[in-house]
Amino acid sequence: MGEVAFPAWDPVFLDLWGPLDLRYYGLMYVVGFVAGQYILTQLARHGFLPMPREKVGDLIFALILGVVLGGRIGYSLFYKPEIWGDPLQVLKIWEGGLSFHGGLLGVVVAFVYFCRKHAIQPGRVCDSLALAVCPGIFAVRIANFINGELYGRIIRPGDWEPPWAMRFPTDAAVQKYFNFQPGMGKREQELEILKAVEDGRWDQQISQHAPLRHPSQVYEALTEGLILGLILWFAYARSRRNNQPLGVGGYGGIFLIGYGVMRFAIEFFREPDDHFEKDADGLGTILLGLSMGQLLCMGMILVGIYLLFRRRTEASSA
Image 1 (cartoon, rainbow, N blue to C red):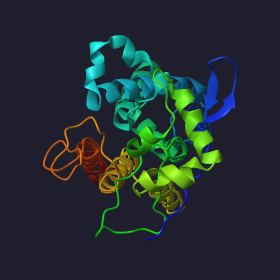
Image 2: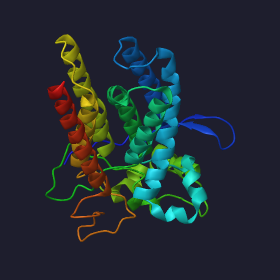
Image 3: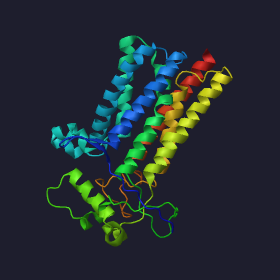
Image 4: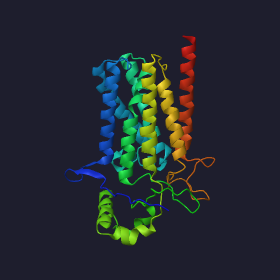
């Protein structure tokens, strides 16, 4: 079986002062929104996005609110409903926990509200967002990898054995082997893990207790971020070159179907959330052996098919 060492980078990009710091996770969201603003500005300049370029910044601000609020509320509803027992926990975004599907719903609410407020046709805004979102997905999945979170399932005897399998020091299976003290905060635990890696305790004593896993964060970055983005931009370039517009809603449909199919497939390699009840195989599933992520992706695929069907219907009746 092949194996690649997990790089164990510090999740904090820049220590500021006191408890404040700049993390790769937050930085990658900034990268995603900056890239998205650039793409949307270019689409507005070429007339694809039906709004003045100077309004793109206002749209981005609305989308940021939609992603953060929708992502956190979605995480609380879909994955950890018990935190609603203490509503203040829902507001603690800095402790982690954002759902992509919740963020997507938040984005839909934000841009529909923005379009109604400014009397803009929402279909092309939807298509423009589909063309602009993939760099952000790629960046955030890389941040998930740096954090050592959302790692893949354990590779068991008889499973496909990729040569890039990894052992994660953040794995729940090895947390008891670190010198974690009662009451340690998240940052203190991160520093203890980094110290164990630097002084050799990870390689010599602890790593043997960590199971080999799929680096599913990298799988998602390459598929949902890179490959899906290339597919969307190939479709956009081809339609412009041939002067055959895809139709309003077409790019949004491609994105929803593409993301849904790719994420659905990768969920078979990604460790389901541990707070769901485990089945006989030790895999957290919700319904018919499917994870929460897969069930949500099925909804995305259905909406994407609807958008493509409506696009064709509108095109044929035009």
